[in-house]
Length: 178
Image 1 (spheres, rainbow, N blue to C red):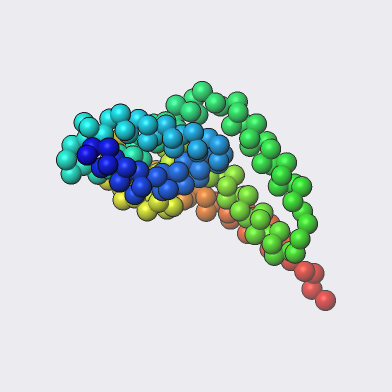
Image 2: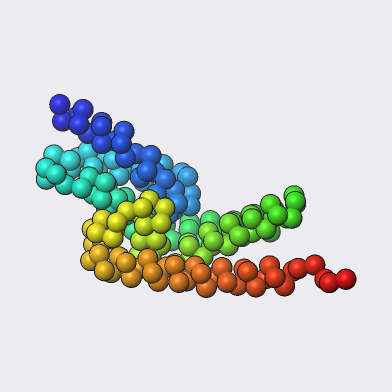
């Protein structure tokens, strides 16, 4: 019976947890591994979960802690991945102008988000992509809801500032007047 209940938890939350990990790690293979480990740890601990507990926030907390551990042990691999991402951005110069601009903006946003401090990146992803409330984010990040709100606010401010540079560059590339 408990296994069936856990299978329902996996069915309900696996996709969202995997998407969260994919966005945060920016590596599908890491997201696969961390997602599997998240649910393995959840399976081992689900018997001790209090009735009525916020299972979604609990799973995000497990996934977030696994991410922290992963980044501590894989810092060199992450830097190499970022270098590969910048090389791909330079190589993708073909195609229509609008598609190229959208691709550039997408890479820029990804670079800005990945450069955010860890708690800001995690809080931003949980709030803006997965639409968790600040209480759940705070629980996942082991901080207060107010701190979670502050992390999201700071992340948004840094993202807007970074995108402001992109908008200025786009205006500078406009067609010369006749």
